[in-house]
Image 1 (cartoon, rainbow, N blue to C red):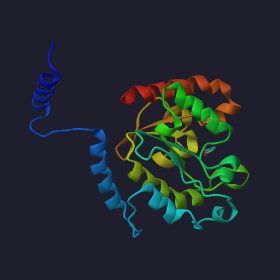
Image 2 (image 1 turned 90 degrees about the horizontal axis):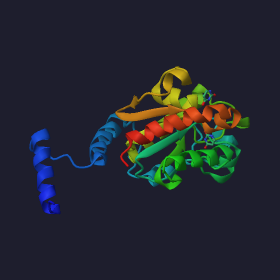
Image 3 (image 1 turned 45 degrees about the horizontal axis):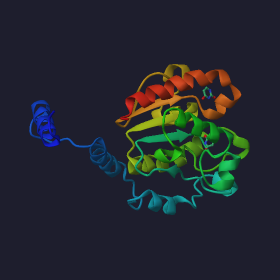
Image 4 (image 1 turned 90 degrees about the vertical axis):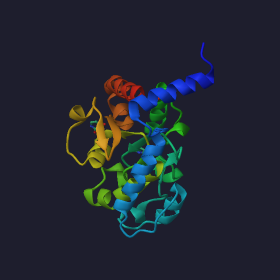
Length: 230
Ligand code: URA
Ligand code: URA
């Protein structure tokens, strides 16, 4: 058997054969560089924010669209600030609006189970939505609302720097990926969100109405898990 030190030396030699003298360490480090560039490119006159908490502070009183006046709470996001996986839903519902946290109602409980089925705890991932405020009667977000709110999500993604994104439902997928494709055409392949591999699956609220879609969702999340490092 090789000692740990010998194994490290062998590994480094192998890396040098593959990549030359440049040392590539963790993927998170690459993403930090990529995302910093992205933040600079996207800088549009906002105060620079360095953490999610700063961003939350800066935007939680937003009144840029009419939903600001009807919300109970601004629903920023929750979970691991350095998550490898970022889960993006549509918009807060009644429970989320009351608690100020994403995915805490019935759909959220199903999301928790779906994540656990692939060995992820809610606290391992970062969870948020396209819209931060609840649309009245849970109607679909309007394009005007999405346009106002999406820059907040872009900032969140740049701060979390996830290795992967899971888009839940068509609103999330079509908004992130800037297309109008159907769920059938979006599922089962890897999309590219500014360099971040993105997987699309059914929204858990849709699964509550259509339990026959659960099997496909299970396949989607297993596929996602197989892409992520263990
Ligand atoms: N549905 C969503 O899209 N997001 C939530 O936070 C809750 C329900
Ligand atoms: N149609 C929906 O409304 N939601 C989904 O998640 C998939 C199809």
